[in-house]
Each structure stands twice: as C-alpha cells, then as structure tokens.
View 1 (cartoon, each protein chain N blue to C red):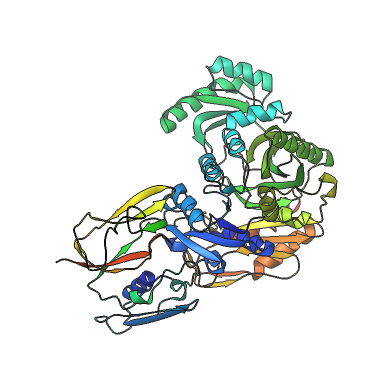
View 2: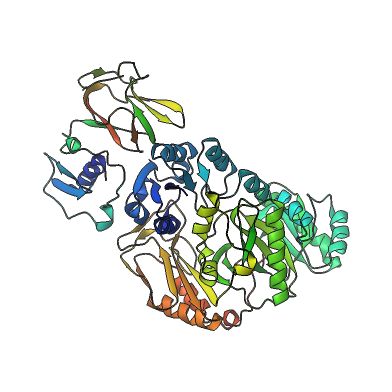
Length: 444
Length: 145
C-alpha cells in the first residue's frame, strides 16, 4: 500500500479523498493554488504545497508543477479527483513515465473513452446498444431522409458544432425533414461557421442513467448499480439518486450487463461510470464512459456500503478487489443534491464570502463540503460548495430526509441552489419519479 | 503561512504589527511606517495551512526598502549550477538585472531564475537542494536606486 499520496484537486473532493487516506493510514500532500492556501483540505493535510496562482491553467492543470510537487514531497501516487486532470491522457502518461502511480485507469482507456466516436464503435462491438444515427457528417438531405427511414421517426438533426440546444431540430415525420434540414443548416452556418449536420434517432423522454463499475488489475470487474441523473439544468446535474426510480428489473439488469461489457472491452481498471439514455419503453443506449470518480459517487457508497475512493486506491496499489458481484448488496435508496453557489433562478455563479454555514445532520444525512464560515467562494473554479446526501430505507424516506436536511441548512453570504432543490423535492412529477431529461431543443 | 504571506496581510490591511503562530513557528511582522492598525483582518484571510514551513523568523520585520524574490514555480532550489560549482550569488553580492540567482528543478528541467531588479543580496532564505513551493520567498534584495 502507498505511504503518501498527492491530492491534485481542490474543494470538496480534495477533502473527500483526504478523509479516506486518513482512514487508511496514508499520509497526504495537498497541492493547491495560492487562493486555496487556507482551504479545509490544506489545513487538514499532513503536508501541503503551493503549485501556482489561482488560474487553474497555471496551477491545478499545470502538469509539470504537479509532478514536481509529487516528486519533492516523495509521493508514490497522485489522486486527480474529478474534472481538472482526471481524464487527461497526457497527465496519466507523464505519471507513468515518472514512476508515480496515477490513481485511475490506464492512459489507453482514458484516450479510447475520450474519443466519443471511437468509444461508440467500441461499445457497439461489445454489444451495448448505441443511439442509431449517422457515422459522420451527412452528405445532403437525401442521405438524411434515407437514414431517418432506417432508424425510424422521431429523429434529431444536429449541427456538428452545435450544443446546448442550438442548431438542433426534432423531426417527427418524413414530410417535415427537408425543411428542418435546411433551417438547421443555415442556423448552423450562421452560428458555428459550419453547415455540417448529423442525424440520429431521437430518444423520447429520455432519462440519464449511469452504471458505476469497478475493475482491478487482475481483470475482476463488478458493477455497483445505477444512478439516475436526469434532473439537470444546462447539462449540469443537480440531483442524482440510486437506484433509478421507475425502471424495470429487466432494464436495470440489461444496463448493468451492458456497462460491464463496455468496461471489459477496454480492460478497465479503477472506478468508472458508463452512461446511458433510457427511453420510456425501457430501451437504453450507450452515451459515453467517464473514466474518473464522479461527483455523485456518494449515493452509490450509501446504498452499497463501499468507499469508492478506498477501492480506487486499493486497486491502484495492485490489491485484488477481493469480492465478486454476488457479494455486492444494495440497501435502501440514496439521493444527492448539489449545492452550488449560484442564483437559483438564473443559475449564474454567485461567488463571494460565506458569512454563515450550518450544515444539516441527523439520521441518514451525509454532507461532503469544504465550506466554513468566512470561506470565500473563489471565482476561478466550479461553484459546487456542498453535496447533501440522504439515505433511507426506500425512496420516500430518502426524499423526506432530504427535505428535512435542506430545510435546516443555513448558507448566508452567497446564493445557492437550495431553493431550487426544495421546490423540486415537492414537485408531484419528481415525487412520482416520472421526470425526464430536459429536451435538447428546449431552452432549459 | 509563509513570512511573505504575513507581510502581504500586514500591508493589505494596513496593520502596524501582526503575529502568527503555527506548528511551533512564530512570525511577527512590524511595519515601521505603517499607519495605526485598522480593523483586524477578516477570519478567512488568516488561513493556517500546515505543510512545508520554509519560514523564517528572519523574514519577519522585513524593512520596507527590501524586495523579496519569490519562487515562480514549485521544485527543488539549487544555489549553484552543479554540485561542485560556486553558488550563483551569495549574501552581499551586487546584482545586475537579469543575472541568474538560482536554479529551480521541476520535472528534471533546470529553470534558471533571474533577478528582476538590480541591487544587493541581503539574505538567502532557502538552503541548497531544498524543495520550494510556488510563491515561497527565496532571497531578500536591496534594490539599487
């Protein structure tokens, strides 16, 4: 096992990793920017080292500085957390070349899954269904029509350079395709300077369901069930839960089997997440694989009783997983709300000084947060300030506990997403578990 | 917290005197020409990181005419170009702008750190072959006017 690990991240996840290291008796070095010098993780770490100015590009994304920090503090391994360098192939390769263990998958797996087209082909070959559609840019409206006939309506026409709802059209019948194609093409030309278009089957009332997998260096792989992350705003997840509500036992089994097939196909080592779209009929389609620990991993920890960061560290150190699928059990229901320093109505960041912070507690509540009274939310990084996670015997109990927890939480000085969460948690559609992803052509 | 950070705090908040104790190291900064102390610094601006404590009671009470040369990167500090070579600079040496002061090794790359001002080396704050972090004070220089 490692004696000392460098944590190359910040905020709540740096603290989260540090806590597991402490549980495992591993010394920690927190690499931080100047603005994070007084953070909780830095304060609690065995050692800390300043790696650069506030701008992430010059500190948390600065590969030579981070490697240098690990070298001069004699760290054997680096935990990259999520975001930042966690899915950077070059960083994983440099770690390997410098004889430092990257706590995560191989650079080869990161590269393969980072190339969305390649990942899609690989998943298809492994037997995981993908959203049927065009392989590359369409040649013209005739090709679009032929393809739409093949995959079946409704279809979505998308600009190659598009995103966030722009340059997209949902087409429900054959007669409407030619006009939608032309509109989309001119919109795309105007907005992105390219008129290249793609077409794929439109998944109606899709839900975002992802499966957590773990693999060790001996090729033993298990899944830890699924998470529903359909509650999103501008493609940002806001609430996640496990198990996913309102999907059948067959769909769940199919998802977990497909996720393991994808992980096996890339010989995946460490913790990873295979994401799918699930339609209302329970059909599912592979979207991508995330080759890192996810923000929402605690809900999986609460229902499985496993510590995913501990599993990542053990696997990176070469330890066998030590259990098979039949030893993984699931208890109750867990929900996570992401508390962001954001205006809950307009979802614009709200950096500033936190003047008061009283986290919730009581049965079934876990809070992962780096906040403290007087903490200044810096404008340089993402706005996540706390994750409130509720666990109950069933969904109703988890929801009730989450409502109670959010109601007693005090954050003053910055605006947060808590009012949004409180409203959503009493919404009949949410309570019935019948929500879906915001449609891509809607402006959420 | 480094001596440099304490000095910055004192300047930013117009404090005549500030004293911080952590991990057995006490840093006291007294500013000769400072205005009478204003309100105490807000709590969050008094972080108490542990970790490499390069600091240095000597740096406390830095006379205001001196300039601190800080490490522009994290790495290993070398005073000389090789194990048997003479140091680039020693205390009392007169400096020209652009003169090499030291080397910081980061990922096997030897980065020469140059003087941004002409002047005289008053103090070398770091031992040879020691790890340094970003922003750590390395030298005190008396600039030439």
